[in-house]
Length: 241
Image: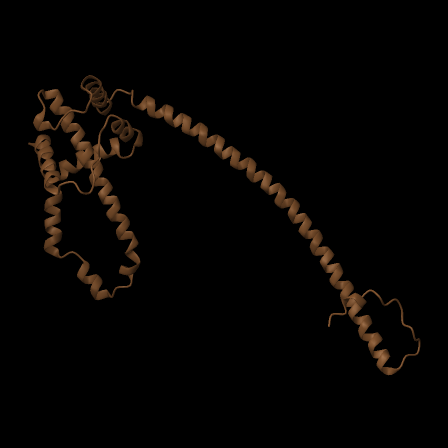
């Protein structure tokens, strides 16, 4: 039974010389009243601290709101200047921009991108077609590698739990390493060219975007693999003979 309603009803002892049981009850009641007063004081102190923290929280919320608005404002200005930079970069004199402008003029005149290089009629048309093919293949290859890298990263924890013997089996054998070195020497020039093209396209999304606006399609995973490899061989031959 809860007798809380009696906690504030007692004013003073009714008997100055109480019996032993009543004396004990007086004593316990006084002790509990002292503990109640202490608890109230503690509660008041905590409540005061709580109100202070609420005020600090209100101030911090205001500061956070102002900081968020500042971030949005800066992001808008940064985005505006980035767009300005992108537009000006596409006007700077360089080989990539020159080819892009030629393709843009070609689309404006013919209504579509240059056809497959095997169906081109002029050397300039063939040159532009091959340029677009190089970019398309390299972009697709880079995206494929990034996708594979993400899959490897997801399975890395499972591989970390393998035994030492299993890890040993995964290491390349000596003759495989030698073959890789030979292949690296054979493709050194091609890799250098690929790095150059990747830097000019993959690292700059506005260049990809402007090509997409002209109608360039990067292809999908269902594209015929034989045709893709054949295109790579043709491009390699065109570049290195």
